[in-house]
Image 1 (cartoon, helix red, strand yellow):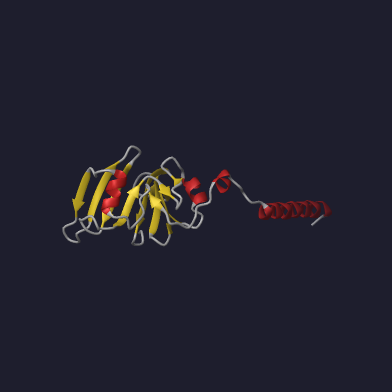
Image 2: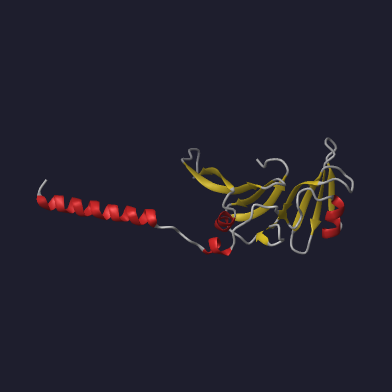
Length: 187
């Protein structure tokens, strides 16, 4: 190796070390870190917490527009159309004392009633707000024809937990779908 090639090798190595040092010290800060950091709960979906009774939901949301009873386990799902969105709540039993065990809606609120996630947010915004949430991505085969060698990202779900239950924020092909809360772990 002649002296000129040693010089360029050393220069390249020096630039590589500088680049690595800069990358290690660089921290990306975005407006969502500054905007809001979610609490650890208790949270609510469309203002309704898990464990809320049917009577309390009716007082807050009005009369449900639809009701379905599962004949096998007695659980009742009721749908409400509010001025801002649709809410579906599943209760333990079909009476006023049955408590909500699953809620599906379009917003997640914190303990102070502040909306922290709504339908206008993207995946990156939700990820920045729910820092402790686990993230599950789903993929489907991509390409055309019989042989497919690629995958296409189709769905993302952010799941977290508080003392009341589990919460999931779902996206399909990058678009917001729903916020779901459940007493049981969300799969």
